Image 1 (tube, helix red, strand yellow):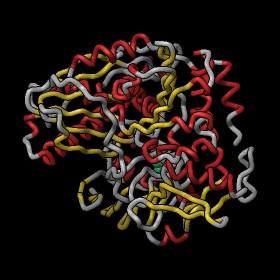
Image 2 (cartoon, helix red, strand yellow):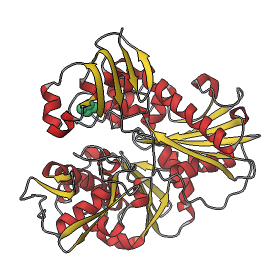
Image 3 (cartoon, protein in one colour):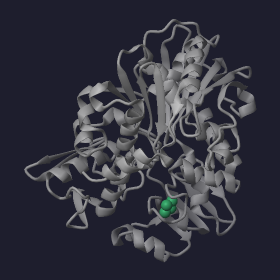
Image 4 (cartoon, helix red, strand yellow):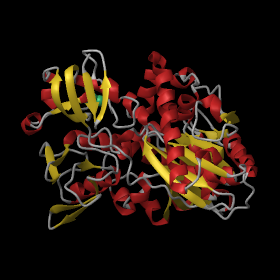
Length: 499
Ligand code: FES
């Protein structure tokens, strides 16, 4: 049987084993199109005996890449001993910090507690001591990206028989984070005896091995809305005290998850006067509007464009990602995370790039580009297809905000502030986001970036379980607006497609 060595780790596998299947679920790298050979993103460097280059790979790889031995992991198979190098997908540049109001301490754990946010793209965690001090922080990529970049592909994969593998992959990653937290905090992981895990509804279903079937079709019923404690050992978590319990905060609906609920808790929105909006521009674009004591929620299928997937040279905010673009003298100038040559462009860079291309006249107001692509930096083109993908995503978010305002019977002028939560929002150039239409321009002056609020809210629940009451209140009292069948949203969505 051939031996396959991935990043120095050797494994014996049956001949013909797909390299992508060996990477799926490891967290080493994502398979944005679910390993179907459609996105060209699973580039790896391969040497040794492998299947010959297929036509689909030729369509994605340049001559230079082919000479260097670059292949698409999901399309290459081991036919003998081979060696595979990935780009290294350890999460970096993930915003772990988040605003948190002053709280009354009454920890739900006796030694140390961990708060975990299972994001669609990344996982983030913090370790707390009983004084409420952060003892360590850690993050990694969500290994479920091996089953697709978006929630829908993963739910399809789970229903197609991969549910157990998906659950195991993410549990192992959470275990890895808990161990990393303990190591960095200088404690034994056995001292972690309380955990709060937040995430969107699908993520919590997949993590707990709950069937996602009801979430995949109308009426999008939620059979398990959480607000429950589960023994960590029953979830297969091993890097905690054997007695540790995991608390999952409540979800408000199939597409409005516990992550939005905990972000609301951390935002302190409840005590604010006037109308406030909270938007988490992640893969799902969840948002909430508070007005007159009422909460309105929605979730837009914005897709993973702003998480760096779905566009030709998109990548997560890791070293090598262009995270800022400026137009100087008609030419683009970029900032690259890690100050190394650019490998691609992440969400905040995408927003800047589109704003610059508009300003420079490379894109017209319909999104049409005269040239098929414009080079943002050497080897990092922004294509006509990329612009179309951005248009779909930004109009979904923008139209979602306007629909919530419409339902509440108010306009942008009535809004006191717009809070932006989530990793991507932390690096967002708000002015550019208004210029390219991701956010209503009238609201950009009131924007406040609050960081990883979902994780901060989970931490609040860890540090004082009394806040569970607030979460229950948000989840049960909030009115979830179903956008897919809302005529106002449909109209706005089309209107906001243009720049
Ligand atoms: S082409 Fe391999 S994951 Fe998309």
